[in-house]
Image (cartoon, rainbow, N blue to C red):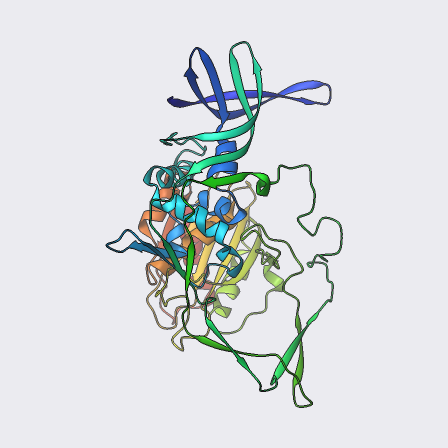
Length: 428
């Protein structure tokens, strides 16, 4: 049976009236019966079955940031996970589903189409490319139409490999030691206005009115085992004595994040008013220039984000400065104009490199935090050059960019501010 995607509208009761919500559904026909499946339900229950995959599916070709995979001559699959791939995602069920995606070309194409169309067209259109689609679902029938309301089980999935072997920094040979611990760590449970207590309502993934994706059952034709390849060794000390030092550390499990599907402390982007920013080093000059720009008559306010660059693909060293240990930082000056448009100026610690600043501008309502993450990840993966392909994608979404070279250090802060301001007027 062939399915085609169409745009549909759902009537949702709201305050006594039926509100129409536009959505996309797949429609197919068999034996005179019309079958309708929401495109979002296939993403939720069949393809992106956990929060990690849900976040990756709306990005552009992002899976290769987390692992590489290859086959040997006997059709055995090997997956090498990078450090960015969380330990909790090494659960066999997660890995088995991931292996199903990457070993089935059509499923992987569907996965990649979602992010691509979101970037290019602003919708979730994608092709229905399943060769076999065997599900158990909750349905509604009427007038020759079967509507799939909720997919309860995905049956007869097949991983196109004889065996699956995985490796990760977390998979090591453990040796027990009779020596006492040198140190132990206790978590602090201090609560501030940016920390959620896991014991308070809403902090954990407990029962909710939303569909629980863990209830969707997945079964496979072949019981492919997940073999863990150990890399390196670690020593486990379980005993303590009078010489064991105790350290109090921040509890990193207090706040919920949807990135990996676990309970982690959320590291959200936090804007600061330009006058509240205190930064030393190479970025200090940039902050002073932003303070001068804020005095321009058509700039309403300037907010600042200071963050570390993302890790990027394995082997990309630009995320750290020359000592190989210290994370390289970047700063975003978000300038809100009096006409409600927004300019974003991104400066990166250069450490002597000839790296330009990046100016981003759009008249549209944009999720800028996501854009910052994308362009800085592209910068790392391109070893310190702004990703032209990424900037072209953004231009297709009416987000315009301008790479701005730094002018001579002999120029004053005022001259540098005027130079940047002229570049902003050029984008207008």
